[in-house]
Length: 256
DNA sequence: CGGCATGTTTCGCC
DNA sequence: AGGCGAAACATGCC
Image (cartoon, rainbow, N blue to C red; front, top):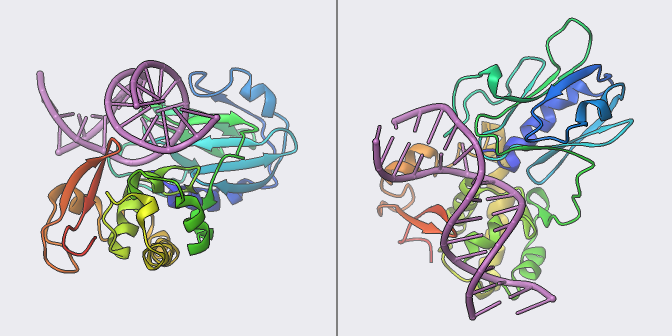
């Protein structure tokens, strides 16, 4: 579930660490550089940013990049901003901590990356140059340019972080549902009005889901995805297809 | 027990 | 060269 929306929630929560010094910590060396703690200890956190699905902590030393994979979550000052991760464990087992950053001596870690499946990554000075337009800055013009020459399915192209950054599987299905676009359509085949509807769906629906708490709060919420009930818009049964190796949930009646 | 799961990276094939 | 799709990664959960 960690998509751009979750990264945004965690970025926001991480703001509490700005101005603090990193006094030490621990990492799982399978997901972070071995000298990570050494590199950041003694540095101050000067700001927090988000690029796509990555949370960036700027420091007086290197920038810390946090990538959450499929099951990672961030705990700031002992508080998980997103308690229940869909499809991930609801438990908060310290054995799954892949990173812990310590602040004031004697207090709990100011930041913990907890990730059972260990598909997340912790990086120093990550290269963020390859990311496409952020999901918060999508326009019809930018999408049109990005879709040119892309003959693969629009759903797959939306998930390509070099095209639009921050969209994950659930949000991609969600915006296609709202735009009324069949996820199998070749991206380059979308007409101007269809690209425009898609851009509007991304700009209008995602902020609503962000306010509701993340990518699992849409029309195609996890329970809907697994049960495929009648479409909320027109009553036609939703369909599940495998597309680009992932599950696509969509309505064959109103998505063309 | 078998199958499925939100994401990225890698690899082989056109 | 670069787009594309499949496989791999790792592990909890239903």
